[in-house]
Image (tube, rainbow, N blue to C red; front, side):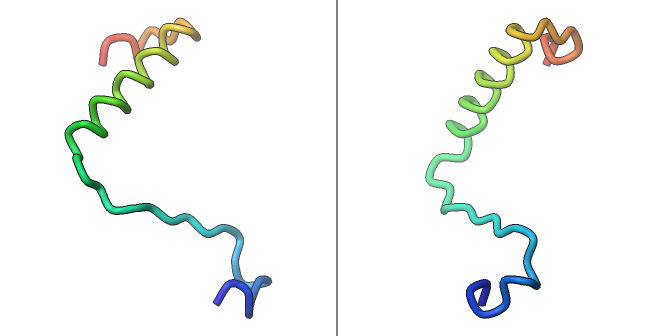
Length: 47
């Protein structure tokens, strides 16, 4: 559909099937904490 009507779309976002949601949450939390530490973001450091 996007190929037929490219002027109708700004972006396309897709996602895959979640196999292990809890592991995904752990990985996301670890990544977010690392970014908070790198930028010294005080509010995020206490999540």
